[in-house]
Length: 405
Image (cartoon, rainbow, N blue to C red):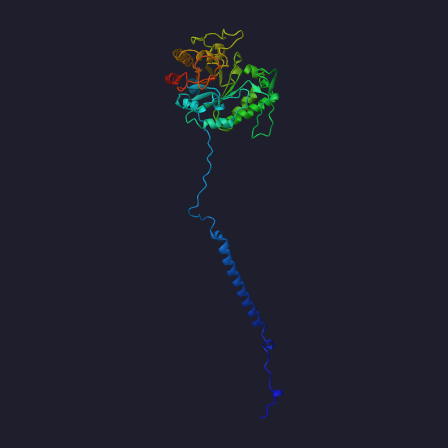
């Protein structure tokens, strides 16, 4: 049988087949989905291998991870006090917060053992600006409450010293603080500052505010008849300084007191600008004092502030054994006494003045002349009553203050 091959129907190749459009679209979608699934799985595997931490929720804590402790900044918290505490439990601690006497650890321990509540002139400014960082470091070592720290605003500045306030954009110039006629009064390149000078008032504003920031609560102006060119109520510029100090203390909700060494000033309105006036007693070798307005030891009047001429016009009076670094001053005379006379003198003065509602401040750190030839504390330049040193007066002093409470 013959077959006509030309007449047979040819079978088309696969690419020649007619495919519906819908079927083609379906196939493309399936293939695309498969590719996308494979890409996703591959990315997930890589992610888990290289970045495992990204799978931890934000609030989930990793077990056993050490917590970094917050740094605690030490700060002295000043508290309330009364003028009775200042008068009956006040102690001279001249330059304690400025490192005077060098042996700050032992002086700190002596203060902790004491009946002292108030530390008079603890932060000094004599011929140098206050060192607030050092003061805070020393304050950390005193674990005693209550305690009130005082600051001395000296009548002596050095014109070659430098001072800057980290919170002020101002370059302080000591030359612009000086009272004109008093240059080189204390030593070369030194002067008496004048309240009338705006630059000195700026300096006082800065250092008193920084002092309050670290907890200082009592401020004493040294020899105002030198610092204030117009020491009377009507003309003085010190009212500006006092107003700023009290305003800042009020903003900090902090109790402060402001005093002054007013010597022979008798203007009552002027004296009452201050919470207290302060001065020495002028003892002789037996520990007695005079009952008159001026000491007979001086040609000019060295005021005895317990006299009615001054005390009747003041809010409060604080008295102490005066010191000037000379052998004949109160501290020099006192340190040359034997111990029985020293304690008798302190007891008599304390009783005499506290009974008159005045304060007598016990000596816990005060300047001596190194050639004084009497007892002394950490070195020949300073008196301290610490039982560790030569004078060993602290127990007796504390007994006197204890009786007066």
